[in-house]
Image (cartoon, rainbow, N blue to C red):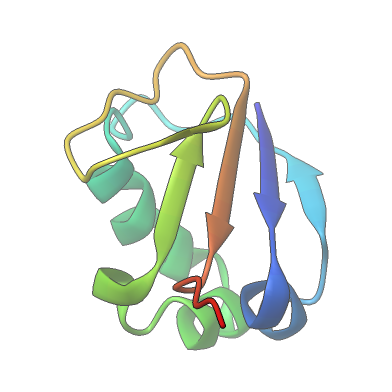
Length: 83
């Protein structure tokens, strides 16, 4: 599966995207946001407050209970503001 990071999430993690194999325990967006910080200090810093991270699964906005087991692409980004 492809993980894509945007804006300051990308900057803090240190990459724009990566291919990963999620562990069997990661079934939802909430599971993903709980698992990612354990991958290293850069992930822990970027995702310290998972409540503000927005997630899209296969280009559709997702909620914490959205299933990720069949996803091909997951994007993580900070809140979007407009002007």
